Length: 308
Length: 237
Image (tube, rainbow over all chains, first blue to last red; front, top):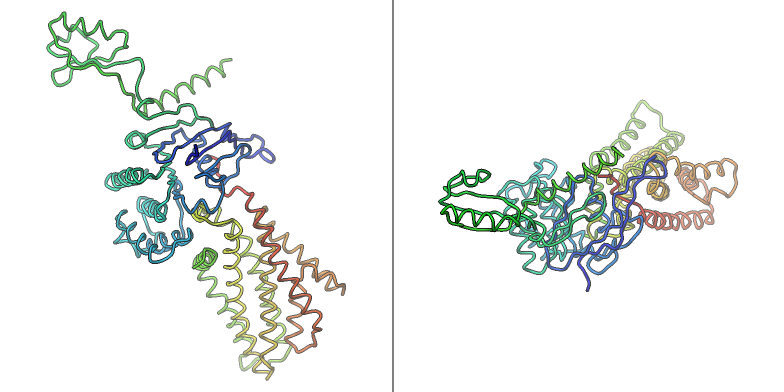
């Protein structure tokens, strides 16, 4: 099956000849992004996310390995006409917003009247109509990011690659972008999104990969990744606090977080005390928790090495 | 507009003051030379044209050496190369921008030269021919510089281009035919001779001009091949 984006044992090393210590940005990196999904790409700073994106778009050549984007090898220029890209901290020509979006559309081979129509549409979607004739050189970071998204979407791409797309946006535009991405998925488009805003990723992504030190350390459906396998939350009512001193009281109910093995015991204790069990649910972690766990294990590993 | 022209247009737009003011300076120099109290003769004409020819070559070299470097440094290159554009087309766009900038500067030079030539009652056709040869020399040095700039720092790219062009200068002074290999100096010298009405052998024009045109294409293609293998986003996260 052809993937929208596919990395096959890709490694990238920076420096080496002139610099004393080479940096391994990616190490034997493998990833497949399917058509029609919204894929979240996460990782701490320096994990290699941007390098992976730059390799796919042909800005950077891998040291070893290969990959395909929309069925063609990385760096294939005609394929990029079907791709939309927004860089982290984008910088553009100092044109008016309208001309800038138009220029980037034309660079992708678009022509009037379709180009004119798409530019108008993008200005409207990203609420840039009033600022359309102002130079982007005078735009705030948030507005610049909106222009960046507009230029990435102007060619109605099959694959959208976004590096930190919503970090500088206000909540209203952020919601608009989220809806836009969900609509794109409905139309069968693929979205590959790298972000630090974990809540955003959690809300819209079908699958998530967590990158650490240049390799994928977690990969799976967002729902699976967030589900804890060993904890559950039990909510009981009409039970005195003394029965469950470790519980948190909220809205007249007690919320208990406990290992799955204790689930039966808690329920029986609640019933024995004359209480009612309102709900028992597996605990869902937030991406933030997953992320922090990863950072913690990394720190432990480092300490262990230093100790040795 | 084709992607190459769009890139060229943006290159010019970013340097619009430079591109507009320098041709005016060329005309201003000519005005100073033909002030009533200054006596004008052929030597003044030659000196004016030679001086502005050297400026044109310098402008071409400096613009070409920094064109790609500045785009990479500012990361604007990412926005452009994320579109369906080949690296060599991107370079062609930047080069077209440099060629047009030099063309505008030489237009100013041409106006100034024509003004001085009119004071000396000299014909205008040799001036046009000399300016065209100078433009070709600028295009050639700009392409050679761009070739070096794809793998060297801009400063070293300038040095590299001047070393190649310097070979032609040495050949010119030694009166050998070696100057034809990288004919920047050869073109400049031919332009100077045309200006003062010296006889130019058809042979020189028939060889020098085609060699220069072919070299512009060859160096552009070579630059494109090297640039296609370069990382344009090298910031390590």
